[in-house]
Image (cartoon, rainbow, N blue to C red; front, side, top):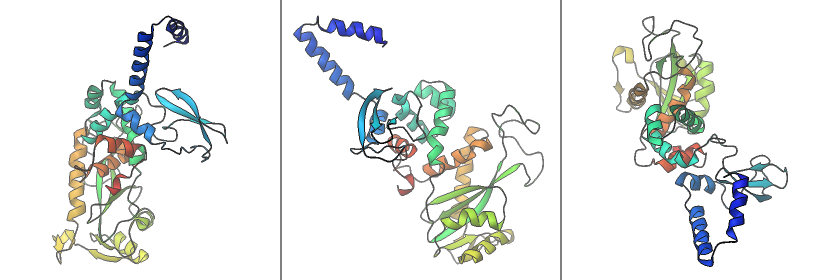
Length: 322
C-alpha cells in the first residue's frame, strides 16, 4: 500500500465503532501470526540473541520491518540487516513460496516443473535453484573415516546457456567429437567412506599435486584408501602416509579379501549420472551445484524434508550430519 493510501486509511480508523475496532485488531493480530512457513524458518535463524553479520556485535536494536522480515540495526557499526543478510538467499523475492521450491529440490524437479509448481517464471526458479545450492555445493564432510573409496568419473563438457561458444554447437547432452577421454570431458574425483559420507572435486588435472591438495585434507590419517591401479593414488597415499589398497580393474578384479573394492563409490557414480541425465545436459559452469545437490539427496530419503533443504540453504543445519 502506498503512503498516501495508508494515511487515508489511518484517518478512517477514528470513525470506526468499538465493535469494528475489535474486529480490525483481531484481523491484524491474525495476519501477523499467519506467516508462511518459510518466513518463520528464516526469522528463527536470528534466535533470541541476534548478531550483526557485518561486525559480529551483539548490541542490536530493532529497526522496523521490510519485505516481510524484521530488520535490526547494529549500535556499533550502525548498519542494518535482516535474517537473510549474509546468506545465499539475500535479496531474493517471493519468500512465501520458498517452502514449495524446497520441496521441488527435494523431489529433483526440473526448472520448468518447479516454476509450474510454485507459480513463478522459469527464470525465477533457475535463479532460486543456484542460490539455494550455493552453500550446499561447498558443504562437504570435514573428514572421511574407515575404509575410503576414491575413483574418478567423467562428464561431457557443456557450455549450455552460453551465447558465445568456443567450439561448434551440439545437441544438449550430445556426444564428444572424439572417441575415449579427451579435453571435451570434465574429470570429477569422488571419495566416499563406507558410512556414506561423500566428497567430490572437479579436477583441473589428474596428477598427484592436485589430488593431494583437494583430497588430502578430507581423509582421516587412520583411514584405509581403496582405489584402482592408477599411480597417482599410490603416490598420494605414500605422501600422506595412508594405508593403501588397489583393485586391478583392467585385469577384471572387482573384489579382493571381501572388503577391498570400489563398489560403493562406483555405485554412487551410477546413481549420480542417472539422476543428472534427467536435466538433459548440465552446464559445466553449474556442475558444482548439481554435485552438491546430489550429495544432499543421496541416502537421505527419510531425513530430508522441505524444511531441512531450506535450512541447509540458509546455513542453519549441516545435512552431512543427518
